[in-house]
Length: 125
Image 1 (cartoon, rainbow, N blue to C red):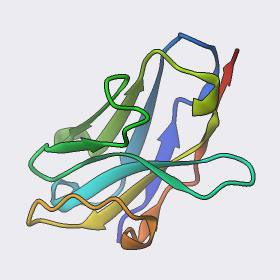
Image 2 (image 1 turned 180 degrees about the vertical axis):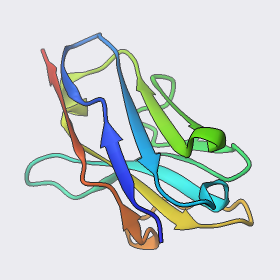
Image 3 (image 1 turned 90 degrees about the vertical axis):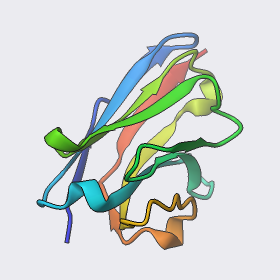
Image 4 (image 1 turned 135 degrees about the vertical axis):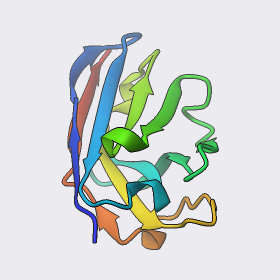
């Protein structure tokens, strides 16, 4: 079992930056593949970025080059740095985790059993 708590959301102007954090409970965080998803009102939950246990990363095309996902196993945390934000990035952002010591990267919401409560990101244009 792992519990996830996101933080760092807020209101930012278009073109600005925002960093999200996801703190995880448990002693085996390093064996979990982590990901970020987002959901705008009336839309499906979409994949944003993922990082494997070995630190390999994968991004949605819409955020590639603007967002950076990272992890700190010593801190049981992963992070999403968002730069050059656009109005269409506005959504509730969720951190997710799945046991994946093999190093696989997963990107579909139904592949992740553990979720945080979400944090709102609003980008004003």
